[in-house]
Amino acid sequence: MTANTRDDAIAIAAAAVRSTKAEVRRIERLQHFEGLLKGFVAHVHRNRARFSVHVEMENRARGRRGKPDELVESLVVQLAVQEVIEYMPTRNLTVEDVRTVARIARLRIAIFTPDHLGMVDVQIQRGPVR
Image 1 (cartoon, rainbow, N blue to C red):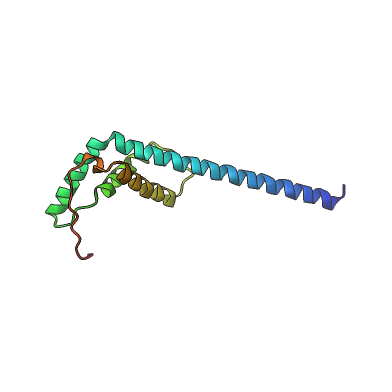
Image 2: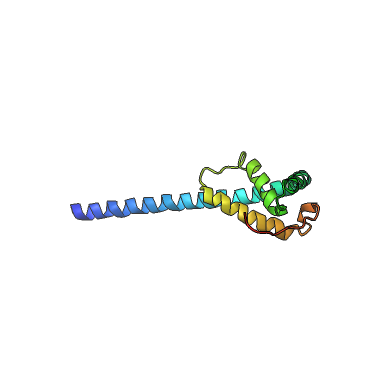
C-alpha cells in the first residue's frame, strides 16, 4: 500500500465517520422535534380546563384595553410553549424548530379539538393593523 492509497483510505474513512455523526445528529434532532411535538399536544390536552380559564381571562383583559380578541389556539400555544419548554429536552433544537413545533401543534389542536378545547366561543374582531 502506497502513501497516497493509505491517505485516500484514511480520508474515505474520515468522511464516513463525519457522515455517520451528521446522520446521528439529524436523527437525534428529529426525535427531539417529534418528542416535543407529542409532549406539547399532550400537555395542551391534559391542561385543557386551565388553559380555557387563562384564555378567557386574557381575551377579557384585551377587550378592556380596546384590543381585539386573540385566536383561542394562539393563546393556548403561547401558554403551553412557556410550560413545556421547561421540562422537554430541546438541546438539539433551534429556536426555529421550536417555532415550527408550536405552529404544527396549533394546527393539530385546532383539527383534533373542534370545540376549541371546550372554551367559550370568541368572536374575532378584525380591524386595521396598528
